[in-house]
Length: 124
Image 1 (cartoon, helix red, strand yellow):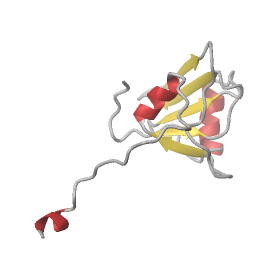
Image 2 (cartoon, rainbow, N blue to C red; image 1 turned 90 degrees about the horizontal axis):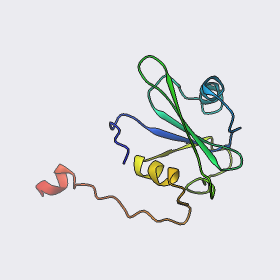
Image 3 (spheres, rainbow, N blue to C red; image 1 turned 120 degrees about the vertical axis):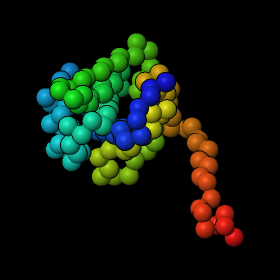
Image 4 (cartoon, rainbow, N blue to C red; image 1 turned 135 degrees about the horizontal axis):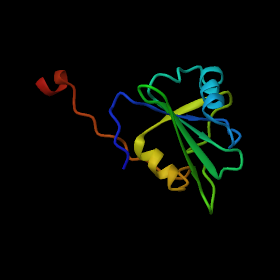
């Protein structure tokens, strides 16, 4: 399981990329295509055009880190269909782990999250 602080968000790029892209090209894509700051410390996930390679880019205090995973069998898939014009989606760490395991999340259903009742409702 990936353990990240709650302040770190995970952004999955909606468009596929060339699997050979490196740190400079991917950080430029974060700025131009996603309109986000690559130095924010958040994780940016990119899937290669053929679906066999996934890359995760993030800034770690004094430099970029680029993780890469290639599936020997199967393909990576976006977790769900996205509306036209969507550049990225925010996913949770559990979704990222499943995605990197090669699990297709398109047909998965997530149970509603429990939220505590507001203090006003509980006081009544």
